[in-house]
Amino acid sequence: MDKMKFFGIYYVAAIIALLFSSCATQMKVTDKDSGPREKIVVLGVENFLQNHLNLVKDKKVGLITNPSGVDRNLRSTSDEFFSNPEVNLTTLFGPEHGIRGAIDAGERIGHEVDPHTGIVVFSLYGEHRKPTEEMLRDVDVLVIDIQDIGVRAYTFIYTMAKVMEAAAEFNKEVIVLDRPNPLGGMAVEGNLVQKGFFSFLGMYPIPYRHGMTIGELASLFNNAFIINCKLTVIPMLNWKREMFWEGTKLPWVPTSPHVPHWKTTLFMSATGVYGELRTISEGVGYTLPFEIMGAPWINGYELAEELNKLGIAGVKFRPLYYKPYYATFKGEVCQGVQIHITDRNKFNSYVTGLHMISTIIRLYPDNDIFANEKRRKAFAKVTGSDYIMNYLITGYPVSEIQAKWQEELKDFKKLREEYLLY
Image (cartoon, rainbow, N blue to C red; front, side, top):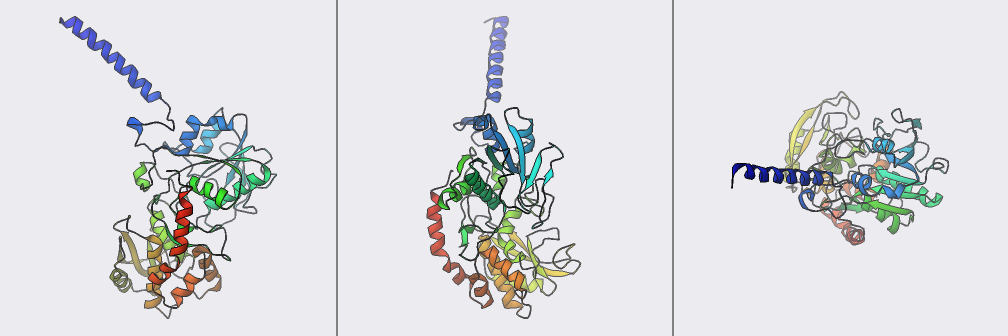
């Protein structure tokens, strides 16, 4: 074959290859995609914008979101909706911490106008936790895109539930754009909320670490707990239950001021419970939120030694000194321990937190961490019962406390199976 003919064939082949490559990069992601993109986790919002905009065609859209509502390129859902000609975004709703995420935990928030879009923002963590009929006057369909952290006592999932209740009451549609559970979808642990202890930190009988995505929880709440709104969940693509956050290869945006990194959610599922007492520091106010346990009256070396003696799977404890900049024990030198997770698949976070409380009670009986009645009630709300607190105070082994919830946890796991999407 002469050189000119060879190069001519080579040139044509190269052009064909380039065209195929261009077509491949422009293809939309669909629910049935496979092949080279199989390992890329596609968020619910990305799936929605590419494949399901027909669901909001000719409808007025209300969006419930905050800074965690972003795609893999860190474009916010509110900005994406506002600039998309196929989405008629009329109203915004903000959960705890506000739509821009700048407000402290528990602080009430008022209504405002979003400075970027000029759209009214109704607060769902102020005078109202549930949208009123007036708030929904200019809305046909409510879209929810918020990143949950996989812990029962995190209010975003209950804001979602209240939105769903309002939708059922006022005949509105709800679309939930699914997102990963950063703790993965395998581990399920802890007691269920008991009657008398339901609150905005635990509206339904689910365990502390539920192992479900926000979309799966929406379906569970809607059907098992009889909200009965018109609900559509837009699934992720290619997410696997065994994935912790880093396995998704997605960027992490803080879900609230003290959850700066995805790994914080692992620690929070252990220490967030005793943080409610305000008699032990969990690291809020220092550079290690939820990663530590400390107080001025603790001996860090003693506490670390006793906790390590327990041989808790997947974790080690290191003694430390620190001085909080704000919050509990502000400006006081504290001793305590830092949690080091050695195997996240073996780390039973909720039970580890109970071991930490139990050890503090045993080592330092003269420092009553449950002395404040108001904080005792807050602890009971977060744990969803009073028996855990009472058992800890009276010195019950954590293994016996854990045994008490096994039957109800078994029943929940069976119920949960009906609503798993992945």
